[in-house]
Amino acid sequence: MTDFFKGIPAIQYEGPDSTNDFAFRHYNPDEVVMGKPLKDHLRFAAAYWHSFAWPGGDPFGGATLERPWFGDTIADAKLKADVAFEMFQILGVPYFCFHDEDVRPAGATFAESTKNLETIVDYFAQKMDDTGVKLLWGTANLFSHRRFMSGAATNPDPDVFAYSAATIKTCMDATIKLGGENYVLWGGREGYETLLNTDMGRERAQAGRMLEMVVEYKHKMGYKGAILIEPKPQEPTKHQYDYDVATVYGFLKDFGLEGEVQVNIEQGHAILAGHSFEHELALARELGIFGSIDMNRNDYQSGWDTDQFPNNVPEMALAFYEVLRAGGFKTGGTNFDAKLRRQSLDAEDLILAHVGGMDACAAGLKAAAAMLEDGKLEAARDARYAGWDSADGKALMTSDLASIHDQVLANGTDPKPQSGRQERLENLVNRYL
Ligand code: XUL
Ligand code: CO
Image 1 (spheres, rainbow, N blue to C red):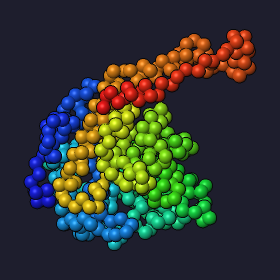
Image 2 (cartoon, rainbow, N blue to C red):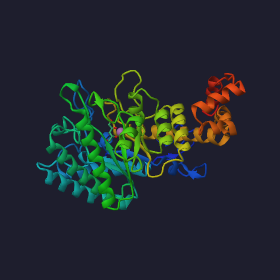
Image 3 (cartoon, protein in one colour):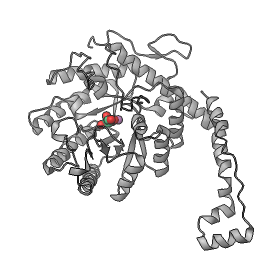
Image 4 (cartoon, rainbow, N blue to C red):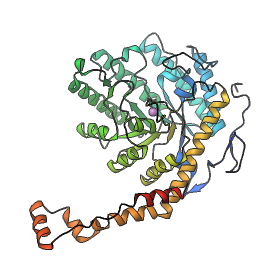
């Protein structure tokens, strides 16, 4: 045991009336909702990078968070792992996620970095065995080091493409070894700053080839987890190629990978793209590529990717409604890709941020389940489209313009507008919150 959390005990469910800050008020892991315990619906994961590797800097100032493991030795990385697994256990999160860069010291060479990663992977394997905590996903950080300043797969320099491919292999190996249920690719700097120096056609082809190689390697290794792309419209580059779910789907179709790759949708990224979270979730479901979520919101005023913990229950309810409509998570889960505010210095801030986020998600999911079980929203939606279930409605989909024209003339078709009843439905949603 380290002394970082100063004896904070495991967080327990105490019910909605509890006034204990260190208790869940809504997240009762074993509570059965729609036939499944909450813990299996939500599949919470903590993110290594924000919680344990981020020092609190912003564009105007450096580190505010001081952690005893900030250093670049294997001993520092092991201490970080000790504290991380203590947090997972205090919170009772069943999963975690990491980038190579978050967990191991960078080596002087590629070989040394890989060796360091392998050392930490072995350390993780032991800790996962001891605690039962599992890996939701692993990924490669192909955006922080200066070598990636012009992209990884989409770099104008083929050596960077090669370095990136080699790094992805090591991270897929680490994920597979640890039984990770997904492997994530976020296109960190896969985009451009100015078209004046960018060959978009080449860059797209390079990104497509890299993704094909990832899928090929997955099959070569017999890996059964899911490959997920995480869409994001901008930040760090002005224009990212994986802009949003629709853009990613077009890209997957282009390379014939729509049956191989799904999406990890982040609330903050959806907001940056000018969408709502539920829009992105619903679209992924309709396209058959829904995989997992990164559960962190942005500040609606700043327009930045602020990666804040979720705390807005009505937003969570609408999001989990779409997750439930997608049939829930299969390999995916709810990853808190969220960081503390830079003034939140204390170890207990880290715990309470997650407690609040887990509670907001649980409350949202329970409201979403009630909405679905009551069926009133779906009944209203079905009623709105009922005409399409009639024989005449169905026939339209296999007819043609000229036949439909003749039919409209013969029948004297005269559509009568009907209310969309938006306010009524909004009022209905509020009844579950
Ligand atoms: C960046 C982001 C990443 C990915 C993993 O905005 O969300 O942390 O989740 O690389
Ligand atoms: Co993310």
